[in-house]
Image 1: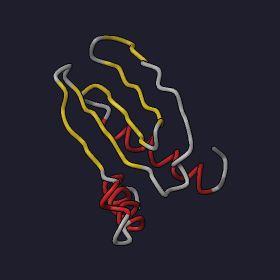
Image 2: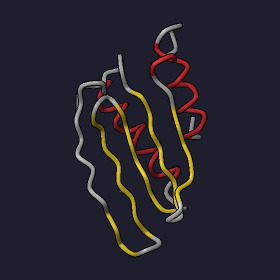
Image 3: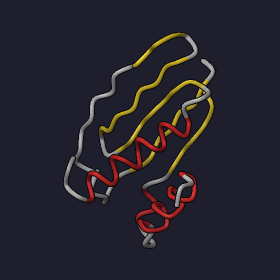
Image 4: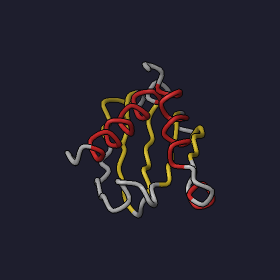
Length: 102
């Protein structure tokens, strides 16, 4: 599967158990910079207790992003070209946690 959106749907479905989805969700929306903001709930997942500090990477006004995990939530933001990049970073974190490399 090479489509990050298909992967995200499958990840979400694999966590839905009748309860999980009531406390966790995926939010993707635009910000005025312009760019994207992503928030993904991580309670009752292998990433729940992980902390990854966010640091803004800013190469220019039009080339920037950050991502991190805290309080059982993945949060990321980036310029208009970073949506797939940020979702791919989330996928990498999920896969690393599944193999305990995180």
